[in-house]
View 1 (spheres, rainbow, N blue to C red):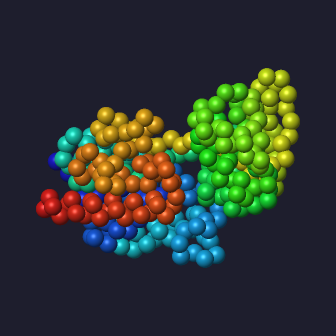
View 2 (view 1 turned 120 degrees about the vertical axis):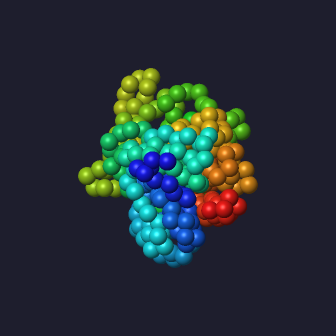
View 3 (view 1 turned 60 degrees about the horizontal axis):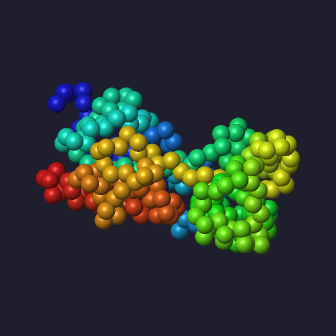
Length: 313
């Protein structure tokens, strides 16, 4: 092996709740983990404002602060962080070969915690108001919109599920869908259509999110795709129900992915390649919560430690 290529016992891809919890546990086990922070350091919590459902914080905590605390905790035990991301990986050889933007790293174990990126509309006003009225997680942020009118964008089961959940808090939920037909299953669509708090608007797109100057969402400019007319929808929240994109494309053909690109695991965090583990939103399409990501990060770290012990490292 070339002297210029690092050899690490454990490399962790991603620095959200899953990756940072894995870093805490592997660092405490003296595995000196290297954490590659990725394209979105801190994961989705880094663009979240108040987190009220993470145990141990009775008054809530800001998402970036929670991430910073976890990172400091991992660093205290010896985890190393690097602003870098994976370009390609070869998992057919041992140790695994990882090419990053800054060079090549060899890893005896690999913990994939690269997360899933929410699909956004791509509007500048939408991006400016993430955490200030715009959200991609109903179960995370629905509580903040009690007795308010809000909108959900999407036409699949995700959008219907988000809208139905949000009826627990909102006075009214507008489902905005760009077409007049839906990808949602018949049962989910019928449930949404029958709910008295839900109004479905077909052939409707969001043109702009209002409230950037105030840093507080106050409405939407929407367009009817048939008449091309625009109007203002008076809502104070916008939830994106158009799904997530798991950050696992670089592993296609080497480990098993499902039809949507999520990593398939067995026994919670094991992939089909021994020594490669996956945790957090990159393999969890169901819960997608900070606490479940942290729990799976713990599992991945313990499995990596066990694997290294069994292989004499």
